Image (cartoon, rainbow, N blue to C red; front, side):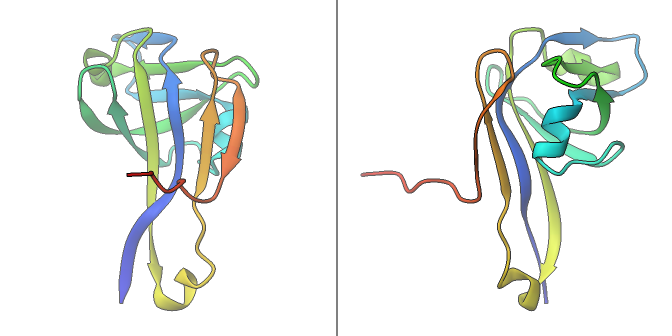
Length: 126
């Protein structure tokens, strides 16, 4: 059996650009792509914390250490500069692979600079 699991996420990145007339995609700082193990042209899911929009596109590389998160093409209607996003990838794992499973969770500051990396989400207190 295969289970689709969260593979990686960039948590609460801030949109720096929204380019309606650019070929569709999401440009992401190369440092962030590497930290979250996201490849260029890989499918990504984007969740906009500001307006609740959820959409699918693909990642492209932006300049390393630039902090760029640019939502492009039709998706530009779903996110504006300053919006906070969660960018996630998923993958299918079999039961054997799940024994070693650990997602790449990347947390950033207000300038999209990495402040923390984890492999699990902390348990919420009641």
